[in-house]
Image 1 (cartoon, rainbow, N blue to C red):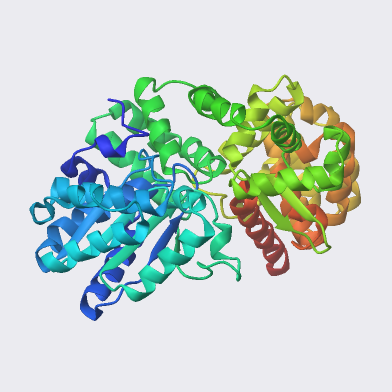
Image 2 (cartoon, rainbow, N blue to C red):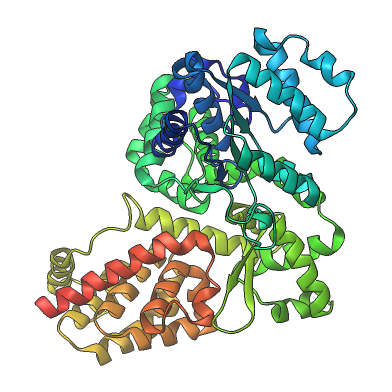
Length: 533
């Protein structure tokens, strides 16, 4: 049974409550704030921030139903304004919409619409009508505004000042809004709403939360086939969680794909996910002006972060023009700016799954290869997170390698045996022989699709055994394409050899942050085991 993905408003209250299996911490934080405001007679205004699909709308709805159930009798009236109410572009229209909602759902507000029809179209007059209605009914208003960021951006500066004045002086209105973009007005010290809202950031789902969400959907819909897939192939779920930036919406899409077919390969599921996202991402691209499309194309094809100077050749435009368009894209939330150690920022697409979709749908065979390599790498390394290093397993493989075989003295009969042989040389501390053997076999090993990912394990082992500078040199050899094949290991190596402040490391796509940290820990375990033994 397919789950609703874009329409949480179409779920019943019971269904939404039952499906609410993540974001419990954020929910409790919001309810505690509401409870404190009720007790103290104050109003703390909150802005929920998160990219598309991170669960902002569902969280607001969950709060809405909880307030109706637990606080309605104490005089707290919740009004929820959905992102579909695109008509609110002025402060006057905001008060109008609230009045309409109160009159429709609350008996004590009958006739308010008639009052504003007979009143001069002025936000102060409209607010006075609302204020009088709240006072007459002894109510406090909890205003839950979906996509509040877009609404606030459409208001004039004068309206910002007016709204701030009202929210400061009135204790009977509390706003909890959501935004898919970072609002510059709350970080600009010259703006009325500078540091005005308490921020609640919706973080990416971690591994346990993603498993809980998909498992709950499987149990709810009796999807035994989908449940078997996530239990037997946890690397699939974990890889897509990482590449999607921990998006709950993408986890629901994945569940729907698993429910419709439970015997595809991991890459087939991933390609189906890209197909599903195509209409949304294509519209997102089509809505951009031509100049911004060029910049997004350059960033997407590069995948890693870029400076303005890096884009000039691709876009064939002056740096001032590129910077202006980048600033617009940053304001839209489509591009992320990372400040380097120098004066220049590095820019990358904020939605990393959009970047991957763009590469997969491009005519570039190399771009598609790079995505395939990363996906397979994550599936290989993440049966349940990047594994702990096991020195006993390495020693056992080394012992097995030393056993005499019929092929003794001849070329190794398998890539696996060749790799174990190099590990053996590293264990007995013969790095010169190990590196010579590796360079001889590397071209052949990379041609074997079944062993390329095991090579990353060997390279990580070599780094942990003290050969980090040698392995970095291997990554610099373009003919091996190791940077593209093993992106996670490459950035982990950069962090170890150089630092996370280096210009090269700052280019790293944010989807790699978690696996890179895990890989650094893995290599640290190897290094510690070599000291202990």
